[in-house]
Length: 303
Image (tube, rainbow, N blue to C red; front, side, top):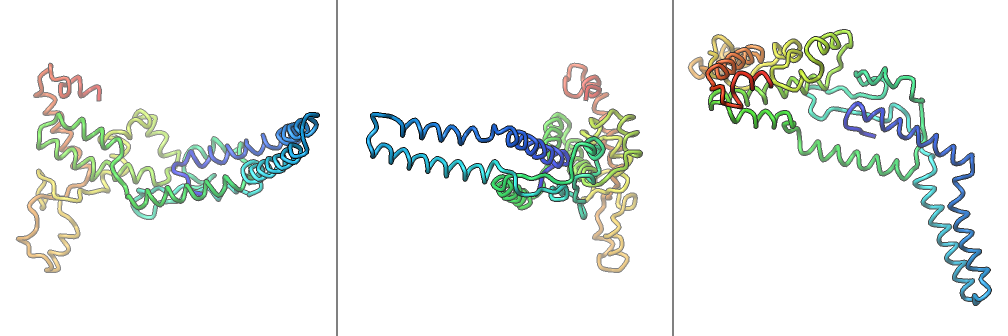
């Protein structure tokens, strides 16, 4: 069964675990049979009616058998837990991981949820067969649709696009390109990889928690990924000599590409690119009027 975030691994399993506890309580106390008793009471009430004719009794019997069969079918499919659900059966695999995204399971999701829920979960629970079929079908169907549509920019990317509309044209283009080529890729890589708590927790505490990960100048992403990632397209402001593309450089050395066909602009690392964009943004902020509510120095501080 596929879920779509690490927390859902635990909430789904814990929900069915609590359902099994509730079902056992109703079963052992006899409250589960109240529905069947209500059907029997309605049948006897119709049968024992002194004014009822023979055909009325026959109709009451047929209606009783119909209601009993429907109730039994519903209970057997959607009430009685009979299908075992093991902890390893629930899986989360990031859709937008870069290379070989790690499949997370309960107890090995690479998040702090592993420790938080460690003492709450049993090794196996049972769920109704009807819900097992529905959940497996719908989760697989949803996953397939998401896989077919592919990865798109997140809400953070959309928010970045909207804010950047107030920037000058040249800086706006670079900021948007950086957001898509570096920030989205680094954030996706961060979400798809496992991180040691001893390494990640101090950085989260130092740089303001998970909010730091929501903007393209994230200190955590700078330390972990920006120096390893590079622009996928030539970036104005960097020469090819300063920031070469290794693949193009190797192709030129082999003679596959004439040197004059190499691009003039370079392919900087995301760290180098961010330092340039940061300096440009500071210049824009310093030159903006104090009455410019989007680009003045204090507005930049709020962001």
